[in-house]
Image 1 (cartoon, rainbow over the protein chains, first blue to last red):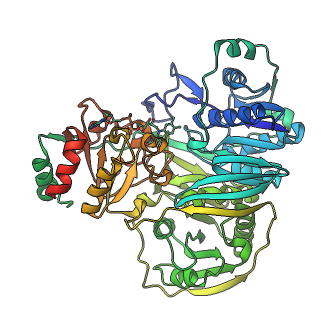
Image 2: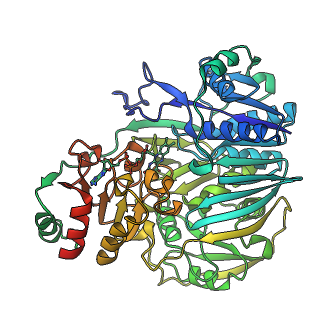
Image 3: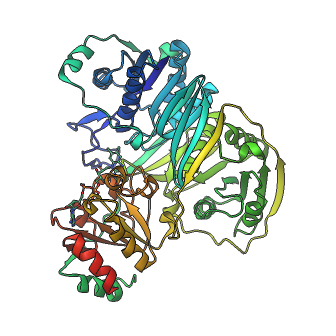
Length: 249
Length: 311
Ligand SMILES: Cc1cc2nc3c(=O)[nH]c(=O)nc-3n(C[C@H](O)[C@H](O)[C@H](O)COP(=O)(O)OP(=O)(O)OC[C@H]3O[C@@H](n4cnc5c(N)ncnc54)[C@H](O)[C@@H]3O)c2cc1C
């Protein structure tokens, strides 16, 4: 059983994102970058399946600039066996990422693709679903529990109204939600080992995918700032303000 | 222009998020068709026909559509878009819409837009990125425009006053790729989190599921929905469907009371468009105070019960 895990390099989730003064995007110079947290959960899940003897091989793949090598090394330090970098300096929209991933799936023939439900930069939440459709595979999005069975996977999903369990035929796509697992910290020996694991670098054209974007970002702005509030000294004042000033109760 | 809205419903009635999605469709402007796909969904189709501004309701009633399985729903939607010549396809930005709509986009070879919060023109929309830390204005060059809509950003259209015709689309086919096994739905007497007028949320500071009753008591006194931070959900104080934030639910009530929540960026992403924000936290440096209209620096175990009692 082979698992493919796509990983994305994004601004670290702890960084306060700043909009560029010319409104063309957000500041990425000298900003800490990390693996998208949902992708870390995806790698961790794959590694746990391997440790449980259910999977034999984990391939991590990343689409983006050469620095994504670091993201792939992180994935390998957590436990991926090898990495594929599809190198491009262009912005790659989710549909194109899905097309590239489809080509990787056609080449590598994994049994399952486990990936993050969304990347915390563009918050699209699309790539996994698009990939499943392009492949004609089943999907289970927003997974909080995965159990592999013979020829299928039983997946519990986090929905707005509660939890739902689906059974999907393998091969399939699973996208991860926050509570699927808690990713481990890579140990120093594993970080060292990861440096020696195989990594291939390809280009989008190697996979016959032309990166043609459909979306044009006209402007990126700061969200409307909230007017400053006040500190109230006690519960009575708070109630008074809510009743008589804000008039919300 | 012809706009297709995919309704979120429970077979009998239409969910509020659908009404906000139709509001976004009205802003785009054009003839609005609502698709109601489900099993035994006649009640929902009838309800959809009453919604203000809807001209046609399409009903697809089939066992394969009973649990919104993306593999069955997406081809039906994509075929409908093609046969009806729709130029816009909209669904609520809930787990329902997010689950299947990208599959429709892939079938139509369209780069979808997620969670639009503003309509600037027929091809230009505003959407939050980086958990709402920035707002992008995006223009799409796709002939068919597919998008999910953030419900809190559009005022619901009226659920009555319309008189659309209902057209039966017939059945759908089962892909056989996935099947429904079971569900654990949260049942609550309280208002629904995403549409409640008042939300009381608890964070890690609450400390335990037992003590979460303090939050629930305050919520009940106010007729409010109960929310939570990720830390509270991960610690098991309350179930995951209460999580507010970048990866949970987005709420924008008249009044949001955050109790024992520090105000991480990811939490703010889900509540900072609330009209009035109250924060109760014992740490005066907590970032939540930066977005709060009224901050109370206090121990929540004193302040929250006192608030419940005095209201
Ligand atoms: C990919 C990703 C997605 C995320 N998505 C979300 C999301 O959707 N929603 C979300 O909420 N978080 C999300 N998070 C987590 C987020 O970063 C924070 O960790 C989380 O919001 C913290 O929750 P908290 O404020 O309850 O806990 P803490 O940050 O631990 O804050 C607890 C607060 O309680 C106060 N407190 C403690 N005791 C008392 C007392 N007795 N009286 C009064 N105050 C007290 C403390 O002063 C503190 O400010 C996400 C994180 C990641 C990485």
